[in-house]
Structures are given as structure tokens and as C-alpha cells.
Length: 395
Image (cartoon, rainbow, N blue to C red; front, side, top):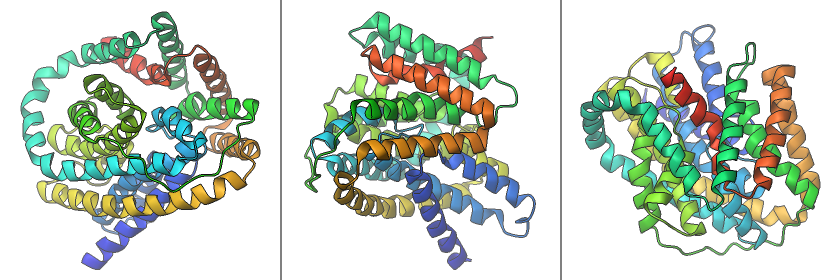
């Protein structure tokens, strides 16, 4: 059985690498397909193997998905905030350094997870019942922090509101499959690609030098904010990064470390959330619940072991892939690459979400372009998830 578990762990790492590198292909989609398959033609296989596969895939994804975010400007739902500092370093020939900073943050997150897992579980079990009624107000508080931390407060409010209204509309469309795909891919991916095509971005030759930065502030911010976002609905690694940076202010290099750490911590904490409060906060945790229900303590220990092993392997894998991208990216016509990536996104959205998804994608993309033009942080566009969650709890 140990050999089979190891096989599915490695298979999950391979799948997470694929989902991390491929724009628009998210682990939530793979997880949903796997749950369906396990109930039909894969029913004869032990569900525990699929739990190991999903866990390793999810953790690997949190490391690798920064590569297209930095080099292609095409983020996943959890890496949209890394576009600006990552692209700044890319244009300075330091794209590899940007990816490495996120990878080191992710590796530190793995270590922190191993140390804090069970103390946090005990703490959350005690305090979660007391704060459930305050969840919408906590989300409103987070939104206000996001908006009023900007210099252009009115523009920030406008962007948050536009994205929030768009989110309310798209997420409530009937017959729209996987609504998050066109919504987030349009707002954060296509908008950035359209601007790259318009400005004819030129990528300089990349170096493999590493950038030095202090890890204390970004890890402190990630450690304080990530548990909150890992256990509350509507809050992901993007919001954790905003809160973490507000709590412990850092520079652009530190922010990339913060993003890498929060991305991995929020995913790891979502598995603990399933065990501690019986709630799913990520698609990966939802897939595990669909396979085995609420995990026992023994299975949780297995999940944490898989998190540790896949996290360490993913760190070195991310470094290797980033070196490859660094050597090749300046030899490619970036405008043509952006057009090709945009075409791939359109194809993926159409195949998964249909014509209605394409319409939502197009509206989201042009909304994103307009919001970016107002000169506020793109984090404000996360109102597309926060506002619908707040409305859901208040109505």
C-alpha cells in the first residue's frame, strides 16, 4: 500500500505541475472530475489514493502557478496579486528571482504548517462557534481595509464595487458551468494580456541571480492573516496577502515571499478546516470531502505528511522550471505569446463554460482593463468574490 500511496503522491505532483502551468486549468476542475470518476468507473480503487493525489496536486499547484503569473502575466485565482511586482522584476531581467521568492515563501509555509497544525486546530475548534455570526462583518472589515489603504480611495471603492457587482451577476447566472473560470480569468488574466498586447511589451534577457530580502516581516504577516483566511469563507490567499501586508508592511520582494507563503498556507489550512470545523474553504478540500467525508485524525496526519513531501519536491521543481522559462522567455515574441495565451484562455473558457462563459469572460476582461486604468491595486477587483459572499451571509 505504501508504494501505491507514493505513486499517487508523485502523480499528484505531476498533475499539479500541469494545472499550475496551464492557464485556465484549475485544480478545482480536476478535483471535481476525479470525484465524479471515483463514483463511476474508478469505484474499485480506494478513496485514500485519490485523497493523496488531490493533496499533492493542490500543494504543487500553489508553488508552480506563480510561473505563468510572473512570466506570462496569466494568473491563477490565487496569484493575481503577484502580477505587478512579478512583472516589474521580469522587466528588469529578474523573473527567475521573482519566482524564487514565492517558492521560498511556500517552503517556509510548509515548515510553519508542520509546526502549527494541531495547535491551530485546537484553537479554531474552540473559537469558531463564537465567531460564526460575525463572519459577514469580518468580511466587510477586510473590504474596508482593502479600500481605504489606497491613496485613491474613491477609485478604489469604484473598482471594488464594479468587480463586486460583476461577481454578483456572473456567480448567479443560471446554466453557467464553473462561473469562477470566466470571471477571474477575465478580470485578472485576460485584462493583463490585453494591456501587454497593446503596449507591445518587450522582455529583456533574464538572469538567474537571486534577490535577497528579509523573510521576517512577510512571514509574520502571512502567519497572522492566513489562518483567518483559511478558515473563513470568501477569503483566499489574495485577501490573506492584503491583510498580511497591512499588518506587516514590506517591499515588493517581501510581498512576493508573502504571496508564496499565503498561497500555500491557505491551501494547507483548508484541509485542517475540513477536519476542525467540517467546512470546505477550497476546491481541493471540497473534493476530499466528496470522496471520504470528514477525514479522521489518522487521515489528517497522512494529509499533512503528503503536504510536507509534495511541498519540498515542488520547491525544487519550481526552481528547475523557472530556470527553463528564464532562458527561453526573451527569445520569444512576447506580443505573439500573449495573443497565443489569450487564445488558449478563450478556448478553455468556451470548452468548460460555453457561450455564456465567453460573454462573462469578455465583460470581465474589459472591466479588468478599465479597473487597471484607474491606477489602484488590482486587489480591489477581489470584490468580485468578497461582495457576493457578504451578500450571501446578510440576505
